Amino acid sequence: MKRHYTGNKDGAAKCLRPGMKVFIDETIKLSNGALWNNGDFGVRPMRGKESMSVHGTGRAVDLSFRHMPPKKGIKNGRLEALRVLKIIVANADALGLEAVFDYIVKPHGRAWMCDRDAWSNYKKETIHGGGSGDWLHFEVSPEMADSAEKMRKAFAQLVIPSLEPQEETPKPA
Image (tube, rainbow, N blue to C red; front, top):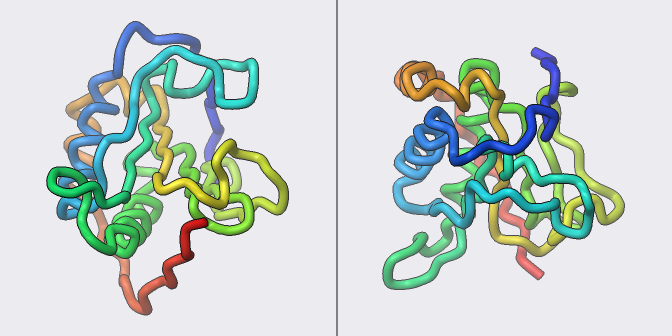
């Protein structure tokens, strides 16, 4: 269902919000070690822009699927990341998911947004690193970011969609 996209309109936070922390931990757990936290809270401008990044609101995270032995990721982590991505997007309303940016898709990345409830492949440079990045950027609503309890409950009640056929893995640049 289409919902309002908040972006950075709720302003800078003082720290990572409690529901976002749960979102990060549960998504990493769901990935069986394929995803790892590549960056969450930090008040800064968006890369290549002057406006504040949603990371500064405490409601965003970058989760990488890059394999960095011996402690981060797994071989072929992109395949597992795609499985998790399908689950997260299928449960977008329950999780308060507002946006996902998938940086590796050629030529300039792709995004799923709650205000269109659909994926869109970028035809021009829209997100810095699009077309070559090895991470997924997630943003959740202020309501879910503020409640660890609501986020735990949403993950406990995930609906797992059919995962076949497996999506193709784009090749990194």
